[in-house]
Image (tube, rainbow, N blue to C red; front, side, top):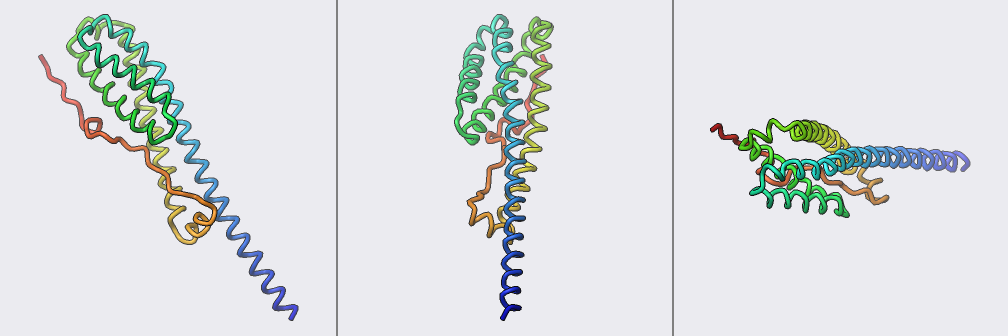
Length: 186
């Protein structure tokens, strides 16, 4: 009788340890994903800080592009105010597209292209876009690992019991951002 009790106790202890290991792995992967999102958010915030400088520099040169610049300012405010990652992703997608459009439109302003402030801002924004791209790739790698753990057996059993849910990838929504811009030479 005592062997049966000891065997049951050992099996229960092993089962609890396995659940704890799976749980801790899921928590670790979720935290990596949250950290990766936080890193993306840091770069997006830096980009938001550069946008007003870009808008002010371009305003004097491109008066008739005022609506594009105003739209960029509005989108910046919406991105800062976004209360969920999904909403922020949608707005950031629009900001990326507008920034690409502004770069293309500025080809029509030789004086602006030679302006040191504009060149410095353009360089900073380009660097920021590169950092955002790297951070997004890292975030998506973390999301992939987390989602795989949440969905694969036997992790999915622990994930279901403790409420771990799939999370979304940081994806570009609009086709315009995915396509290479066309620049016309005059």
